Length: 316
Image (cartoon, rainbow, N blue to C red; front, side, top):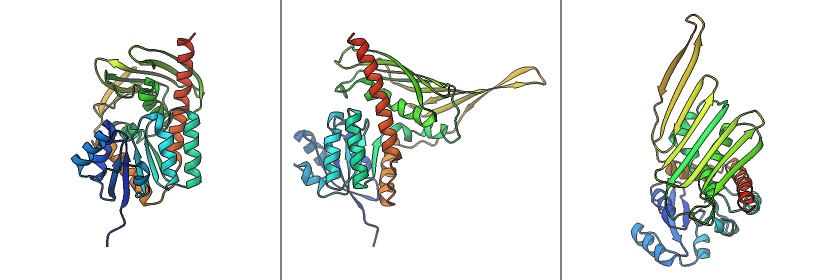
């Protein structure tokens, strides 16, 4: 007799929820019990397309599952997460963990009380280019992060800082082991009543400086991080999953610099699939590790500070 499968549900089956559903159906350890969405037509459409039961009540779904993906608008993350935890479900919440640090703290507090696995969907942690870069210990001196997306109507309920920049904030916190000393930020509203374009500088206590730019009013997509270390410059192309390194070493004999460029081999995988497999394996092996959710809360706290700085300037 095989191992017991994780009974899994999805709350929110819009653009991103559909990808959760598709990947979960291909994970051996998972039995997809059903889905729920407040959009009745969308729920029915996904139910028919993937042959998965459509629950008409979120409570009916939650009482029949062990784990849930919460892929709803950010403003409802806390409400759905706390309800799921009340039903003793392990939770996977798409980023950001919540709309405010106060609501994120409530989720974290309940996760600790219920002793459940809780992961937040910071998918770039599982990007093959970033994982290849992080195989060796890093000592960054300066970083530049650019995250641009073409115009679309998704995630307009939150600022571009919570929508896009938070990905890079999270990755930066994984790369730099030092507290932040100072935050400077500017942003503008262009098409939404939230900030659509933002630029931020983070100065860390160890001297590292990080420049972050995020925009959802671009004519092209870009997700790049440039990392400058002693004698080395790395270009992490998260969109195209490429990693290039440039080295400069001084040769005393020749009395000149030797330059070397290296294109690293990347083993390509689907980041969301790997992220969901990681979540399911954590449940399977009963690894109650708060590091995932704690780092997500830290990233949100910084994002919230950035938003406060920008909004104060815009409202001055």
